[in-house]
Image 1 (cartoon, rainbow, N blue to C red):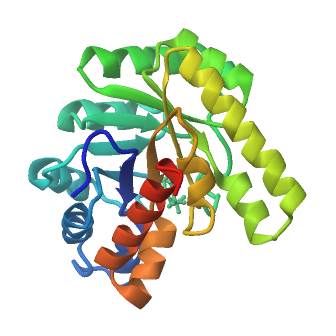
Image 2: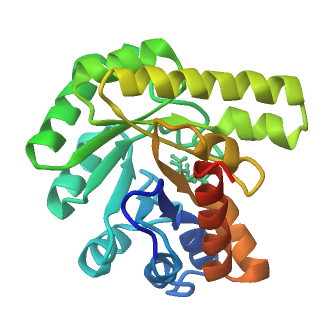
Length: 251
Ligand SMILES: CC(=O)[C@@H](O)[C@H](O)COP(=O)(O)O
Ligand SMILES: NCC(=O)COP(=O)(O)O
């Protein structure tokens, strides 16, 4: 079992729902996957209720909130529909993410600088309901300053570009992206924000991000669910957890 002093692992179970939805029906069940992930060492569960409901559905959020023994992090677009759902279910945290219906995945960070009053109102209403608020942002200084000004509790740094460059085996570009994440983590921590990161992380890319001392939580999904096909979800979560812990302890 994970202990609270460790870097936290949030397992994103969206892609279990993607497989389920390919045939309709109930199988495989994302809540069952969440429970396996928790038993294997996940500290929390992340689920992204997209506006188009392409994977997670409203009923999944209700069941996750009712049945989980670990905190739920609800990822959502900055809309009044999603705000109402969050206020109904009261997850432990809400991570506000940018959404474009036609995108294949979350392509960039939230436009916190341009997001203005609407985003600030959403952050305020969630916080007033006792929900911790995270903003999913690019690792850059302007986004961090705006997140802090807006009253967010947490920033989740988008690691997608870093992981893409790693897949291309472009070591110079990987180093550049890692430097952006490293500097952003320092800056966010100094601004009093809790620092999370995620998107596209794999066994190969997790170590460098886990080693950053300011990092408090990593949210990982697509790779873990993909590896689960080959080695089982309990094994993929356990391996990821071990890599995070080894990186954190300098092993
Ligand atoms: C915000 C984020 O990184 C995750 O929610 C991820 O987006 C889930 O997968 P999809 O982008 O495929 O919905
Ligand atoms: N916020 C990132 C997340 O929850 C997981 O992203 P991915 O590992 O599914 O790409």
